[in-house]
Image 1 (cartoon, rainbow, N blue to C red):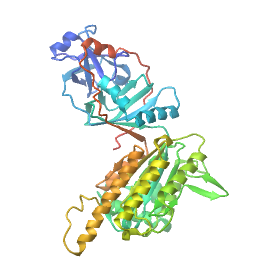
Image 2 (image 1 turned 90 degrees about the horizontal axis):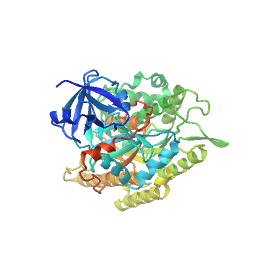
Image 3 (image 1 turned 120 degrees about the vertical axis):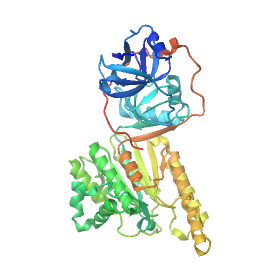
Image 4 (image 1 turned 90 degrees about the vertical axis):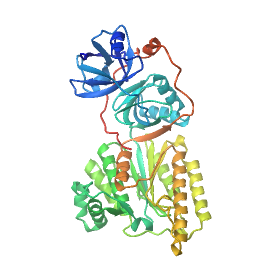
Length: 497
């Protein structure tokens, strides 16, 4: 069959394609079928849900003007329509924009959706049953929101179901606070690495600082990351933070970046104290005018607060109390409220001052106190999301316990690993964040790079059946006949998780 000619229209939604009813029947299609549309002129495919419409000419195919233009398509392109399998979406990450409204309003809308379990967004998708293509726009006119598909699994397309996990990515400016474990185990345990995958020494600022004896630890980190099959956990943590700093600096936004290092005590590297509190880790403050200056300052800050040797737990300031103080200072110092993403990196239990000699009930008591503190001080209304990264041994890795003297120690280690993971998971769930457990260094690095770019609200799934009962073709077609204003689209890489 000859290809159909593309006609760009405003009254077709971005996940649908309209073709003539007779033409559709010749192709063996009916309304709501999924089709692959191959653009001969562009040499690429997109996926759509078919609408059969007798008003469309037999040699034409009507597609959404904006989504077509975003992919480079134009009027008259030759389109081949091929029947495709209906693939269910496991997960979709959506970038959110709001036309003509303040970012704070956007965040309030997303937060509201997030706090009610995401049922509203699932209801919306259930009614529309969209086909997700990377980069395509979906309009939620009731909310005045434009959703851009940033990532879909499985690739390259998938269809919404009630079991689809939805993540909403807010790309407005946000502050970042990194909490990094510097306890003793970080200095003598390892994480698998892929040598040659990362060339940190190619960065001119890192290269310059490596020549300074004060930054010997930076040189050790770079050498290990570039050459070794296993790297110390502390070197993995340093590199992850370096990548986060680099990505934040490149955004050139008025975002603040803070660092807390902890064993059980904590040190804040966010503020200088000279008579009065002054924030200094942001472009445009304290003589930091360029991306390069900002990035160099961040790196210097990192090595000022990362100890060169093992930092054993002592009876000091609780890390989460320090986090609360720091966030409070940031909020007071801010002229305009920004959301905050906190990332906790840990390789084991929160021991308290007794360290590895603590009894299990003591560790559980500390963990419960931390969870209760986070519940009290970091409610969703505060605009904070806490993500956690666990790079310690997992219970699965400690499954085979040998007999003898070593058995008791390993049983205790397995027990403590489970407590640590459970504690971090509970902390993240309170603020609708996520816990990741990377098996290799490259997964850790990818997470920190991506986390510097966008704030994720995880809407999960809903238990309610939201897919409507069968409708007539005519009712389905009418859904797509609404006009929407064109909107600017910013091309960004969101393949982050």
